[in-house]
Length: 79
Image (tube, rainbow, N blue to C red; front, top):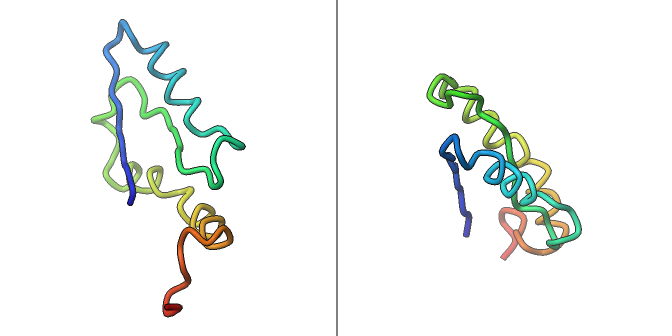
């Protein structure tokens, strides 16, 4: 199961929101790190679809290797 969250924070709460989101990706808290964070700027709507997608999935290849190593995900074809 995957969870994708794209939080947006009201200007008044941004500092605490960004700090919390940035703490999600802390190694040692999980068998395999499954959280990431990137700042989309002051106006996230200006980020192109291509850039957004690239930034959302840029850590996936490393996660997939780690998840397979830990037995969380099986290699294709192994049943």
